[in-house]
Image (cartoon, rainbow, N blue to C red; front, side, top):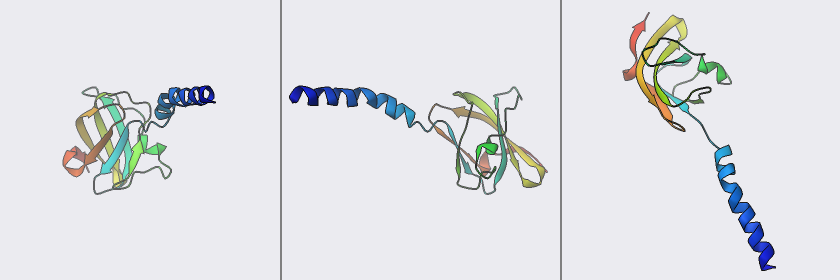
Length: 116
């Protein structure tokens, strides 16, 4: 009986890293601005090569104040972000340092080079 219990315990413990990895939350954006984001695009820092609009991954296609969103297709690194709002307002956030499994936040004080 002890051997069977030991084998079961080893099987369970050996599968834990896979289970923990499967529950990964990935890189997430936290909107701490005072407005709802209608667009969030990333570019490698200084390159102005904007990727897809990440807010389209949200169920309502926008990111409300204090809402979080999982970013897809993003590797850790240094990025600039283009943030869009209703009414064609756009702002840039320069030099975001994105780490694996991290939450990056954008607040009003981070917004630069705003239009409209």
